[in-house]
Length: 280
Length: 135
Image 1 (cartoon, one colour):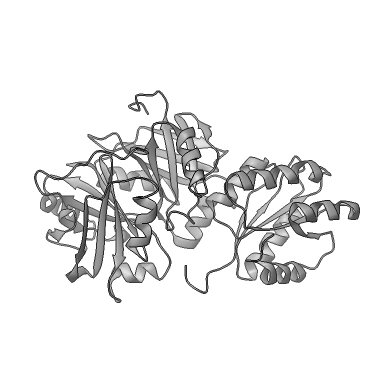
Image 2 (tube, each protein chain N blue to C red; image 1 turned 30 degrees about the vertical axis):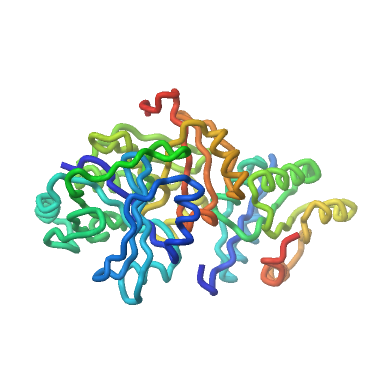
């Protein structure tokens, strides 16, 4: 049973530089910062509520993370948390998914295992069972929680089928949003407030279509929940961060950050409708 | 980013006119010249154009207009870009824009105005030689 999105991995050129944004500007606490020699990466975990951002800096050439970086910084993988990563890998194999790791192995997030992106519409997916009594530092002053993960797919039906069948997700709705140039499918993650949103282009030449053409299907954007969007936008602008104006949406208000400031990650800030932040 | 990073261009059509053949021709020409081009489609508000420029982190914004509303819309687009901190993009415009408006538009930051009949090679050359040297 997959319980929640444990973390989203972001490949960066320099973790120190990326920390100036993720830690110093977004105010996320650092829960772990270590070099994993055998994988050739420095990993930094920054909790954003119940889901973490994992910064990955390659420490040597020739690794998957180093090769990824040749195309630029950005979103690299998503990790779902489970109580039994070994059972998840077996179940995935039984469903016909290709595995990178047949057996769980130790990683930054605990015992982990990766699936092959060919099985999941271009998204690299990891399962993890974190160590018992794991960390959960209080959220920072700006980001309240990880809100949702957006994945670009060519075909919404095929995408929704793959994601729901493989990751214990259940589609709760679809929308057309002409102003954003997308159609989407909403898939809440069990036992968590977060959800996966699959998006596909509506019309021609838009951002999602261009993304699919350039990078293919895969992780597109992360959305972080804030308590007060206007304050958040004003505060970020004061620090020289490029942020769009708040946009009123059906389920809250949104503002987008420029990838120039975020190390290649498209980040959306969201203030959920209703101040409690529990609704969707 | 890597040294061979492609030039990123947003081609946008503000206002109400729906004539976008010119915008599409320019978008295609810049794409064929090896740039990454996003075309917004027609009837974009100044806010929508500024949002797209920010979210796509473009180096260049090209505006196409044939409705005659450029003196009203262009300053608003510049303002919307600046309020979002997007202050270093190369701006250019194309379409039916009278010569007499050129000085004001240049002051606003539109370094080049391309009128009907301009060869696309001229636009490509302009973007290549001016990108990274904004106002």
